[in-house]
Length: 114
Length: 112
Image 1 (cartoon, rainbow over the protein chains, first blue to last red):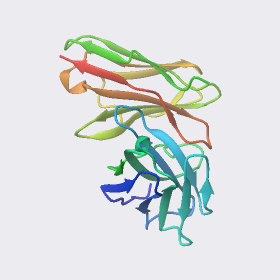
Image 2: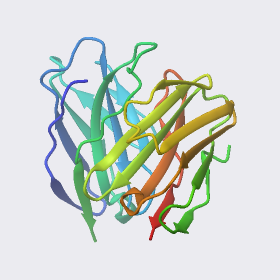
Image 3: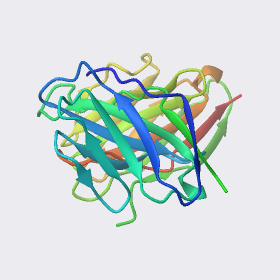
Image 4: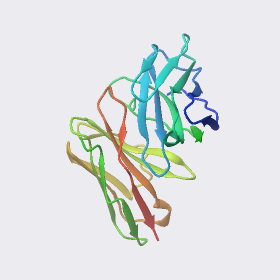
């Protein structure tokens, strides 16, 4: 799987949009970008994933650059409960083998301040 | 759906004892994953199953660890004998082929 680079920490004011960047310059054509988060003392939580088009769901939006070498996770109106470590992971979506492994790096600690 | 269910939520045992962690995946998911999380090593994949068959166990630390999935709705991770360095939070997750992985609340294991 391609490696990802994320800032170790970010701050955001409550009610404002949180924009979390991720670089994945070695991403392959068949690799998807996944975002997870882990709130303290809880299991990781799936947020969103995409291949090349921008994606949106009830939790967040994922913006992937045209060359797919980077992406941004957007939480449109951050709340205190969004304080968590956010992980950006890229992996292929092929059947079989070890392609279902997720390799979690250190992620970005997002702190939402009142 | 109740999500991924793990039991027990907390386990304290003494070195040398057998420990069994249990997981019930989300109904309809055909992939099941076991992870371990520590401060030092972060979140590590131990093993995963597809349709109850182990696919990749390269993350299993050593022979003291074993995992089984006797049916689509149940899996166990066993440590025998346990050692203090096995103390960690163990997560189970499940997914379909195209979905993200959905994690359980974890089992916090302390080996004294």
